[in-house]
Length: 225
Length: 226
Image (cartoon, rainbow over all chains, first blue to last red; front, side, top):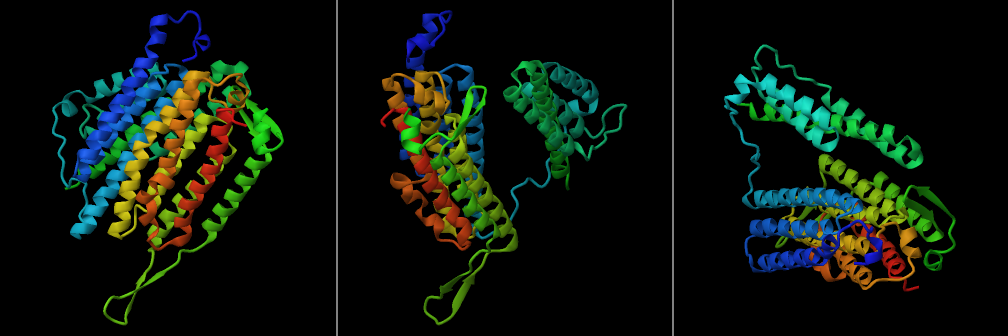
């Protein structure tokens, strides 16, 4: 690591952590590659391959700047997308070998939790309010959790459970807000506060409505008898 | 400046904060060519294979269904656009993202086929692509750690090249080779082309060819060879 790139106020202890973290990530990757080489079953290989992805996150996160964080998030998403794609391929291959066309979605899955009957409104409200306070990606996830609880509880106390059909439309429009915020950052840096709030609340609305959509889809899919 | 010796004279820059896009003849040529190929692939129809049956004089037609055709055409167009983006980008970070996107989309193009051998090959290629996510992103992170920037325009202007930068560039080369499935890893990918639907399968080849040309240029810029 080139030392003169690092600002003066960073303690030297933190700077010295980079090399051990880099070696640590490479050693984790090497051990998981040995594990992959020793396994015989395809599903075990797939699970162990995810460990290499975790080692990638260690190597990237060792840098510890905002640019490195910008690499961590897409790296994580890429790993998730690839493991989902490969497991789809594995399932479809095994289905072709057996020759059956059965769906893998569980046919009946009853969500029989007491919390869904007694306190959904309160919890959903608190989660949405806290999510709006947080804003951004985290806030979207928290508020989306609230919407999921509300959507999954068929008998919310006192209020009728409404299914919002246009919720994916909200998600799309919020996504545009986010992108406009990002473009503003680049072309007009003096309006950074406006673009920050556009990006934060666009992302909040997008993630929250997307997770609420997942909750509604899950209820439709799993509630089927 | 080493940017000009590889790609030809600099036609102009588009400064967007610390991301500086720059245009030169090599990038423009690659960009336009891959967009033309993507357009040709988007308007074409799939081939139908005729397999000779073993032990008789009959033949077996292997055609692509309409749903699978639409799915594959969409993914092939996404793959073409991602390759075009990787051709024109002036940022190492965007390049790694486009590379990873091409890796996923290549798996997706063959994911809906019915042949078990092809699915097997797509599975092997997917495993290699996932493992090579480590050298790809890790190499970019090492270059970031040793130079403090991911913009190619700034990377070309750094006065000296640290050993960690060269190591990161080599590691990133391994990652690019694995994600696009070229020479040392090609055995995992070779069976993927034994399926009907030729023009959409071709984009897998085409994207890896184009991306390797661009990757070599980027790595030469980073390690200041020319």
